Image 1 (cartoon, rainbow over the protein chains, first blue to last red):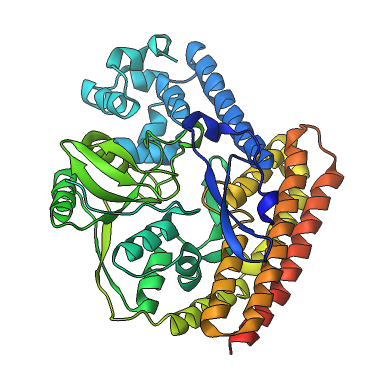
Image 2: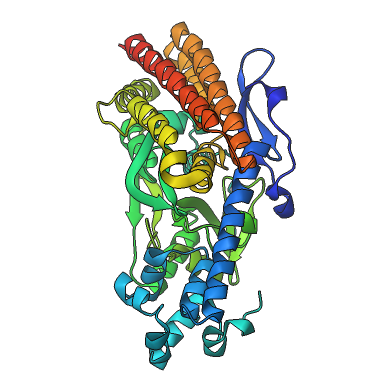
Length: 136
Length: 332
């Protein structure tokens, strides 16, 4: 890639006001570094990935509202987690977390366990139980 | 208290921390040098692992290993510590800062507040340098950022004790012992040899073979997984290749810069030619990314399109195979 070919497309980096560093060749064939504001092919990929996450969150939300799953699954998706990551944050086995997706099991959870989830998701226990109280 | 520390922006966090810490201690080591000596270049499809609900690909060596190899090859010693107790982790960090010693930390990205929201995923192998503390605020030099920044002690604790794969566990590291002069020549040759070995390895998911294997997977995805998943997976490849930290072209440009610098140090003009060749290979990776992005931009892609990008990868694999064989010969 030549120095002047380093893409300067609009991207999500703009919001944080920073540019990333790319390596490119100058007119004498020497390597140098150039700041780039972004590149469309990867911005599209990132935006698609975020769209996917939003779809997953929305889907989980609907299933919570239809009583098909517990709020834990919604909050997990909201925080871009999967079972493995959530399990390690709350310090429980994966199968236990998965069991807590079951509404009946969720309703019987002790305050202590609920608090663990609430801490990880940075919400109150009331918000944990009722996702409509969740700000976003 | 603030340690006099010069922040240089780099493409990738791990090389950047190595390079910045080395410069702080009076050794002028560039980012490409750190990357090349540490044999950072790779291609690997990591089997059985799913990241963000897609298969995992990497264009670089495992987190932490670049610094480890670099240290061993140039003869510096690194002190590393991990912790169970956040309190203990904090006091060790504070002690070091008091002794005027800037340190590297491994952190998780998800709670890194100065990153744009869109980039905050559960990725736990990010690296940064702490070079001071004012009251409860730590002074941070994050190599991928243009400028230095800060984190409160609470924020720093959160990212140091992120959970999930590669959990940092408060990982702190810093060089403690340096040779009088760095023996770069030997280190460069070792680094190059190792990279050639990795890229030409007879393992189906690694190096040149790994690229071919990935091409095969791409051909199968639309039928086996459906267009939606196929596009998501393809997007994942491009992101791993081009996202912040790779310097463009899946680290191929950084590697080319390393070869160019090495050709002068070793006085081997053929490495300079190989550097040019690697730049062209990097360009082919960029072309692949452009064509792949055309596919996932339009939801309804023809099967042809997948075969087309797969063939592009096969061409790249062939080029890299020839390249690394030549490189191996050039340094023997």
